[in-house]
Length: 281
Length: 126
Image 1 (cartoon, rainbow over the protein chains, first blue to last red):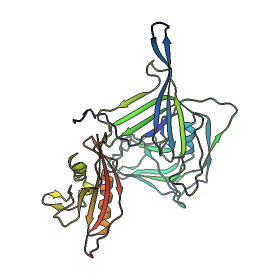
Image 2 (spheres, rainbow over the protein chains, first blue to last red):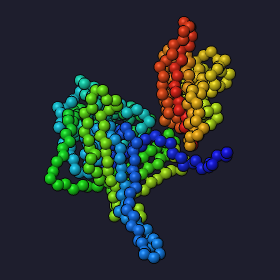
Image 3 (cartoon, each protein chain N blue to C red):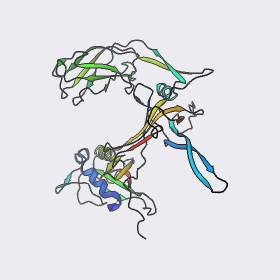
Image 4 (cartoon, each protein chain N blue to C red):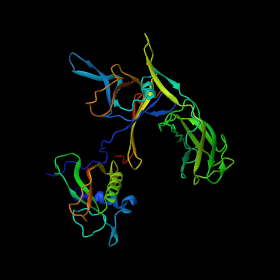
């Protein structure tokens, strides 16, 4: 028998997705999941029936989308973000570290693009999260020499940087540093976050809906993405596990959310949008 | 898929300078062969189909083993890593997708024989 169809250009091969949440300060990557990630469209149907002419009309209402996935990157900050304001975090600062090794940014960086600042505890070799902006002794380029803050470079808070901060290098500054130069960050003092505590519990609470997007990017840079502009969590998620040593895999936290209409958007586009770039796998 | 996906694997590996920098050159081409046998006696890559192909699947799926050969253990392992990085969760030609597993290095029973560092490659094509 012949092949029944040759229409396969939009067959998409499963390969996971990046789950990001925007609570108002830009999209933050929640990190690793260990399950399929699903988003299911739900709605109610109202059938208008007649007694003598059958079904006159079927109309729909109450469109929602149910998200489900199992998070294994159990960053308290990410969990708090996914709670839409129900849970909060507090950071406890540790003792200042003044002997962290320099960070070298290799040549080939991109002008005015965030480069995560990375530092390690010199005693434990643990990567540091900063409770505040680090104090820098100097930022020095291999040819242009010492760079000036606010001119040749800028330090900014960055939720997608493990330390919480990133640096932007500016080729248009006074020193005219070139992207072909390597750059060394000499840390003067870093106050690390020693602990993050997640808190929850109130007699009543209101959600502050966040935007969520699920993105798969193939090795050609082509994406398919589901955008959900207004999402709040469902009860029953946020399960804290302490598995036994006999269990396989990692500790995990199932998440369940529902996307509702964002009525600030145009009617017909209020619940979700699904983008598929041509050729995306 | 031609040769049950091995042509696509070969094309991808021949285009990867991290792989071709390790394997030798036989005549004018990198020693990367889509079949099990080679006349070349340097560091090389060969392949064979390692599981049945199910013709009833809606998506073309093939299992292949890519063997990375060298007389030096560390070279065989480095070649295996280069193949793994080149193929795993990457695509070829916009329609073919690879998933890989590295297998432990197999020593030769002969004292001057070749180490074989295999990579199991699942090839899926739409």
